[in-house]
Amino acid sequence: MATIKGLEAPTEKLNGEDLRICIVHARWNREVIDALLAGALAKLAAAGVKKENIVVESVPGSFELPMACAKVIAGSHIQAASSEADLLGGLTFSPKGPSRTPTPAPGASGAAGTSLAQSGPFDAVIAIGVLIKGSTMHFEYICDAVSHSLMKLQVDSGIPVIFGVLTVLTDEQALERAGIAKGANKGHNHGEDWGNAAVEMGLKCKRWASGNFAA
Ligand code: RBF
Image 1: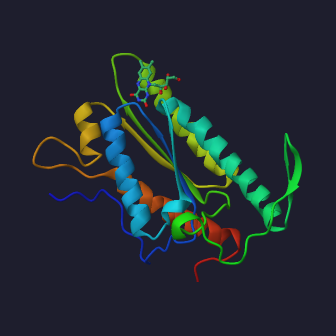
Image 2: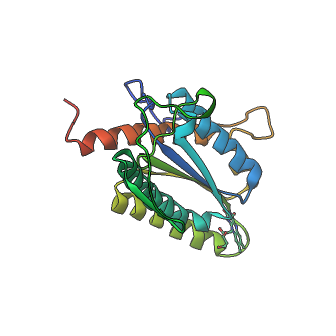
């Protein structure tokens, strides 16, 4: 019997061209991480998120994900505030003393014809990790701490934090959920769903924040 499980696609086409998104991934279980990361990046690109508006950072393991996500969210707010000051010809301070940054010309572009990266705060963060159960209680503690901390972070910060953490019992389950299983059936790459979720939540949270709701 066909399963009833799974994600229904959004009803409208999502346009991510104005979004800025950060992916933070762990490096444990790298083969699986790389497939999930590629899946997420492919869906961000398919939704029109510009390369220069995607930041990818890594941390050692999944336990480090909540702290890293909190820091990149905070840092992107600081970056946004300082680039707003720049646009007004703001003062910057360095050990050599204060200097004033010239205001960029409208439509200015970066090196080799690339457009300048957006410097607004991140509209969504995707936390990617792969936790595979071992023979001790380590797995349970990390899964619990990471899932609770990422949920708390998104609610407290108001920035969607996509839960891209596989919590699996076997290597095979991990490979299957990254679309790289060994058998004829490769499974499904959940990284793709996380890329789509980041775009959908980034767009919706922006719209809701401006008091705009579905009719
Ligand atoms: N990190 C992961 O992302 N996935 C794992 O499956 C994983 N298993 C671990 C198993 C043990 C016994 C230990 C000690 C660490 C493991 N970590 C794993 C790393 C963990 O998330 C973190 O990076 C380290 O505990 C350092 O804070």
